[in-house]
Image 1 (cartoon, rainbow, N blue to C red):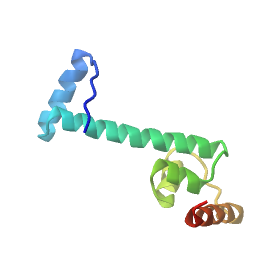
Image 2: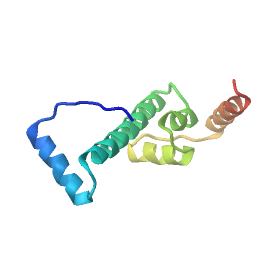
Image 3: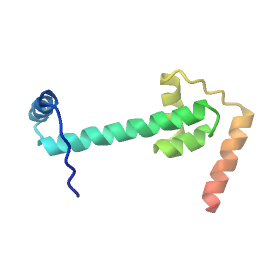
Image 4: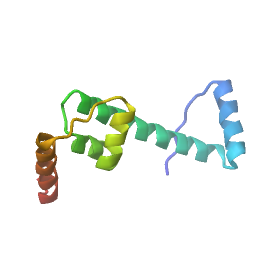
Length: 104
């Protein structure tokens, strides 16, 4: 692992220390977990945005977010993004999956 330094307001640092104590982990572990969650959330948000604008398929959005197609469908539903999944979308997703499997 590599070290990263960040300046934090005192209140935020106190909150980190309190949460770490509550979870019985050290502050560094808590920060790693929080950053991991934030990165996963950001990836999902970016993928959902691209999907909602029609730039990518739902399958591609799932791959970009690092989740399953079913999970991406649920994230879209939770975000209020319609998932019109009919024959055309299925054909696009199948074509994308075949392309990924063939290594193109």
